[in-house]
Length: 295
Image (cartoon, rainbow, N blue to C red; front, side, top):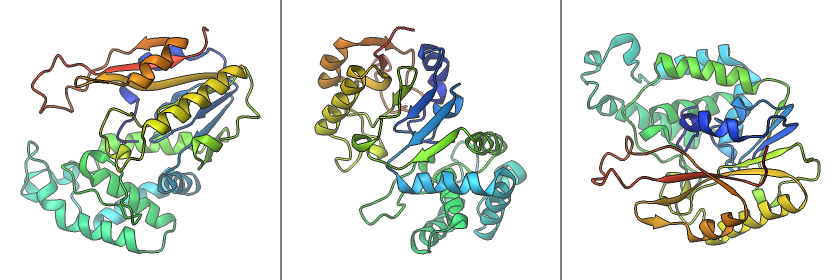
């Protein structure tokens, strides 16, 4: 899944730091599911508070990749959105440097309006996927009225996205994958064992991503999650936490103090490519993985 905040680029560093044997893997803030779909475990539980996202995954699992692709093609054709892989940029009066937003603006807004105001069913959740593909930076954001409200982006549905989507839908359709839609504070950990692993990739307190707007994640949320993880540790349950310790001159002080109790790995990753406006390229984001085990 192309999804903002996804850990695809960091998988090569994160996965080797997980325990070698995992019975139940919990992706507590699953988002685009990048980590959970690539973990070797007897059982994987994906959890996210975003109901729209979970309904999309439910549609994927029930429809299967072949039908999902057919529906995507139909939606793109019905709304006359671009397919630059098939027809090229010139056909749409656009070029690769400026992207396709000028052409897609009107049909995208029509699709967005239809998704927001039609009754939700499997077909309409596939509309959500198409919106994510054509939205600004493939992000997902809903306003206080529960309306998808991102502007159009520069991209469209290409062969690389198609290939990744097929793999993704086929993978999450396997029998050992399940989905829950719970606030982390009430997630039931009673069935977990010392061979389980709870992975957390929450909104980052010191960043301004679309999934962390309108005070959606604040200091109280940060403290509540830290208490949740401390309780896991007390009960002998392994956890692994992705987070940002510092960025753009800011430091997550709560995280810095709390993480001293555990093992901290500093990951080799820079967001310079996506933050081209930043003049000081040496101002590197310090992304970390905090774990409570040695394996």
